[in-house]
Image 1 (cartoon, helix red, strand yellow):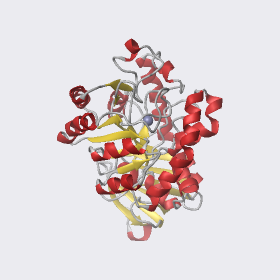
Image 2 (image 1 turned 90 degrees about the vertical axis):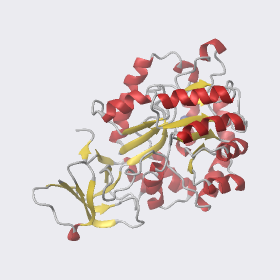
Image 3 (image 1 turned 180 degrees about the horizontal axis):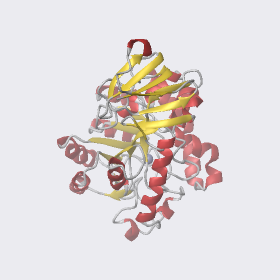
Length: 406
Ligand SMILES: [Zn+2]
């Protein structure tokens, strides 16, 4: 047994902080007990670790990343990077995520996520728990296509996506993904910012195509995430069975109703939009990408505020992928933006980055520090409830009650 003490402990479930808190961690890496130091004895023989002045919070969860070791936002260049180099760089990104307090990430589009998941699970590579969709599924000419490349080069897919057209093809693609053991599927139901010849408003995939994929996923108990920015594609995704809406630039009342009715989770990815609109021109984002992100910015923020007012579960997810503009390791920015741009309280933002983000994962023993759950936590310098930017100041990160980085 190990015992961790800190002046402030946040468990991710309750809305107040445990002052002078204590977590007792069993040898199997689960939380044995959590609460007030006065009421929880140190078991005999237990090792005691104290964090004076610091705050223990549940380990952060990023519900939307790409683990492809990308070092540029020029999508055509991704296609020239050997997969071995992508995987090597992605292990460095996992280390950065761990150093930044992240204990679980959901990879929504990469060709190396499954291998990374295995290497982390077997303790060969340090990092957060990896959950992955494998490569995303896009229609031809859709968000996952690379429009400027010759068709012959993308016909077998890109590092982040494969193409499927027609319900049969979509079903086959879903089955191929499930066959590899993915944790979820990722599909594209609208155009996007970083795809040249479509726009966020353009709906992609037909109802039949979407249903072909969600039904396959349903049968094996796997969730489907939809890249969905414009209203029509969001409605189509939700009506046809997806579980999480990624980006959601223009949620109208119908979208909000469907999100609630389906108990779906909204992952707005404010962080990447913030970085592209603020600094994209200095970091090689193409002109059309800058224009589309600027056009979407206000509606996007309004959309997230409406979802917040409607009590839709909002999860922290950055869409960060590795280049200097959107590097792994700065993913806690999403929680800061939830406070500064959306009006969440600091505690709500912390929960969005822990418990709510964990709703998107296929297990229910992560995201909160409760007895029986995994002892995944971050130790922060200072008090994030007084100043949300403290989420950047990570002292140490623990997964299964063990420090991830020595
Ligand atoms: Zn993404």
